[in-house]
Image 1 (cartoon, rainbow, N blue to C red):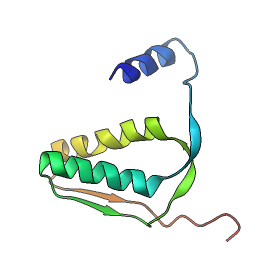
Image 2 (image 1 turned 135 degrees about the horizontal axis):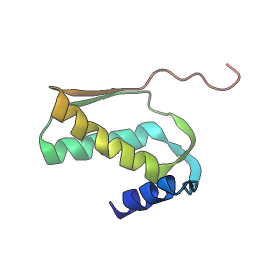
Image 3 (image 1 turned 45 degrees about the vertical axis):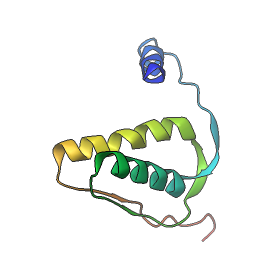
Image 4 (image 1 turned 180 degrees about the horizontal axis):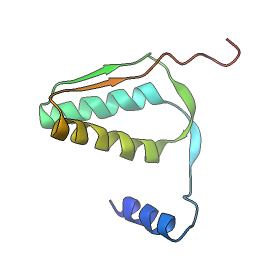
Length: 92
């Protein structure tokens, strides 16, 4: 939450957000978040994704984003399904 407030302050002041970008498997992060949320909330969540979606991203920023998605989905819908499209590999 403090990190979110700091991000808002930076954005409002016109400063760039500091990004900590490194390679990781986005599908793995989504699975962890979906499993944790389902365990805590008892909600029906389904993740449809390839086993690997490796790329270079800011892990903490995506974690915060993914943590908010099921809360919003359950507030405004009846179920939550995360679908990742098939992402072609570079050069294919």
